[in-house]
Length: 175
Image (cartoon, rainbow, N blue to C red; front, side):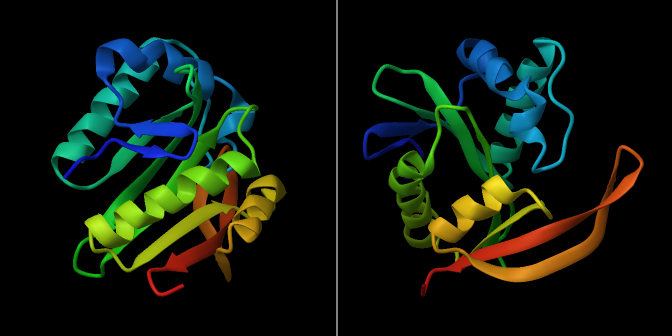
């Protein structure tokens, strides 16, 4: 099974720890890029190496897979991944961090390739995404990508002293 694949004008590839840390740090050191998850932006470049090592370990144990989305010039446009893979329920959670240069047109090329991989290659049935309720830019993208809004999961996580509710979106292999 090839975990790296083309997606229209883009390439999705698993990150390599030594060479991808600076690009990942540049992406994830901006708070607006990670607010929809929610999480704190990276504040030192060593965090990118730690994140890449964690992702590699989660990949080895078949818990998650995160890809770097690069354009033809090799510029990092996004990180997209699946996590919390439940092999018994045949489900996984989608997560993305998008650079300013990412847009609906890019996701319309990338997401079908990810979905094909998740549904056909891995044999999963359900792909869901949870974003902070009120993350309208991400909710608008999910709507445009034909995800179904299933509702709100109230008070799912404490973040900076507040309880965060998630908006739950999904795609099924039969959609």
